[in-house]
Length: 280
Length: 309
Image (cartoon, rainbow over all chains, first blue to last red; front, side, top):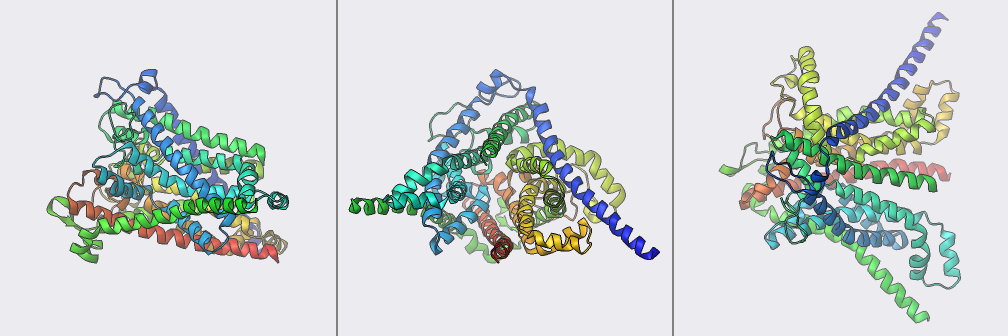
């Protein structure tokens, strides 16, 4: 009897310890997020100024800023979105509407494979097919690398969003005599628009934070550059260069640029979360 | 009327087909270009390239072993740290926490995945590396210093720092997949275990056991991410092509040698050696991700099957 009671209490103690440990894991991971964001905010805010946001990099000790990097990041993200969104959305619509066969399954598998390929490999690919033939690094090459990263992500989220559209809407439109492409374009796509848009925003946030595919495609530049055929600066490559350099002034600038970048990415993620929670 | 609508269908379908096929073409082109660009080293060194341990581009010595070693060890370190924590978080979120608490915590852990790699690198250099040099490293050396993995000079930059940064970075993805897998386990299993008098934790163990192949999938997916992670590792692992037993010594991974050296590789053979390593990394991640997908699908498929019976 007494033996049974100790076994029983032993089980209860194990239960208590293990269930508390899982809570500790959750608290630990959320604290890591808060510590990282806290450091970025604390270290970054002191270097933020109008001059920092608009100026170009200068020799150490003369101030300078990241204006050209902001413009470069925006231009390359824009180019990537201009290619990646239409191609990705069209591929996603194909997968959802016509992809319930072996070819669709193949594309789905390949798209997931491409999502898992390290982004630096996309950078090397673009280096061999764009940078080497052109003879120099360029914003075009950087934007194309980001576009390739974007396409499979957008395709898969678009497919998911279209699959959420109830079949009764399709059937109703088809019963009224609409051709299939009209049903897809005028009925199904509009119904899935907000979902596709949030997916697109998340994909844009993701590529804005990419560094590896830009390192040797877009390279970097110390000047404002508004042309896609020239090397282009970006926030992420600039952060990398500042952070790995020897100067404390530049380290401070890296934190400030990071505050800007992470702020942008977190705002998009939180906004998307807020918008989709309201809806579903 | 009927004529134009079939034409419209054809045009529409062709455009979508082309877009979907572009994904296939991109992957094929990536593979082809990398094989072609790595031909010079493939022909000159053959398969021995993979286990040659000397790396000195100025003497045309190209061996991939230090980079393969660094990639494998840093990824295993990351898994050793991240998997138990991710399992804990996922169990907490699915099996224990009330929805009101679980939702915001799950979102915060997802946000960890949204932070760019280069930002983890920056944080790693200026926060994590000093912490390891001043606090964690001395504690490990005082208590476990007899182990060769904890010997050597403490700089804060090295294999251990790389592994810890990787662990933080793969925790969100492993957690998310384990969560999905646990949620796919039918509730009847939990009810049956609880009805037989099992404690909450014993019930959880049964659920975990039944989700084992999906959890394995999550671990393999985490491995795939760790192997390919580039910027953060490049910034904290020390970038030195050496094979050392000590976790405090600097190391190098395939992804980080590409990030750090590709721009300087002007010589054809040097470039080719780097691209051959990129090819290895590409093939490894493709295999790892394919395996992860099969494992995760086996559980999701089973859950669907039980839903329909």
